Image (cartoon, rainbow, N blue to C red; front, side):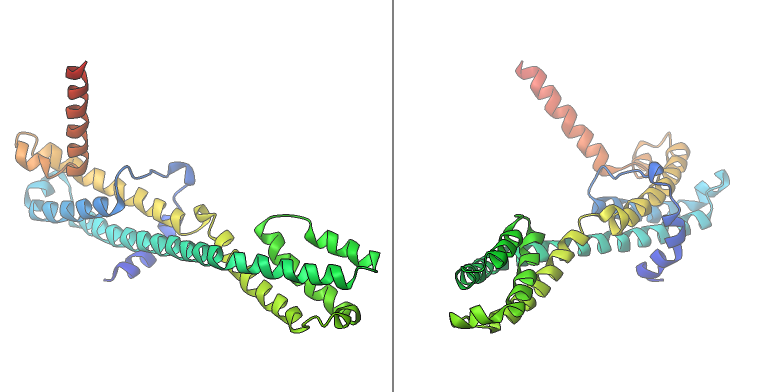
Amino acid sequence: MSDQQNLLDHLEEIKAVPEEKIVYCDMPYKVFIDEAEALHTRASIDLPLLSPYNLTIDKLNRLLSLIGAMRTAQSNWESQKTDKQKAIETWEKEAPGMIEFRDDVIAHMEFAYRSRPDLLERLDEIKEGTSRADAVQDLASLSVLGNENPESLGDINFDMQWLQKSVDMADHMGSLLGDINGRMYFEDDRKLIRDKAYTLCKEVVDDVRSYGKFVFRKDVEKRKAYSSKYSRERLAAYRKAKAAEENGN
């Protein structure tokens, strides 16, 4: 069964995890997934010794399918982060040109409408605000203003195609901005699914590890297979650094 299918199979269960019950990963997700897969392999081999204590093949199968679900959820989250970054990079590349074009249109209109206080007032209103969304809206508003009052623009040989360009640029940059802003709140989307999938998967990982730690409590080497190598090494590094710090003092 594919990892994608595993995620679909567990999706309702994953979504049902209460947000207040979410557990957050304290190591790189790839490391957790790799360790969970190694645990599944080890426990499957040791199943004849673990099954008398009621570790079942069903539980190991559930572990494997949750690992697949989490791998897909993590990949989805990474893809969404990448999409957002691409949108940000495109915006940062194109925004200066958009601002320069908007300012050119405004400058031309201020000159063309210099004898129209009412239109200059509308231009002042358009220029209010400094956010990215304001810049996009400015282009759309300038196009409307120009199309409603074309005569004065014609008197200064204003390129009327700029009004359509303003609309097209507003549509493009607005869509880009929507991609950026729409991905700012991941807690409602792929990140939340990833975090909930991890919570379910870790629950089974901890359970399987508890069996191994008990059954092989007198076998130091085998018992290690039922704990996190990453956590052991991180703890050892911390203790080493702490000891060096104390000796240095």
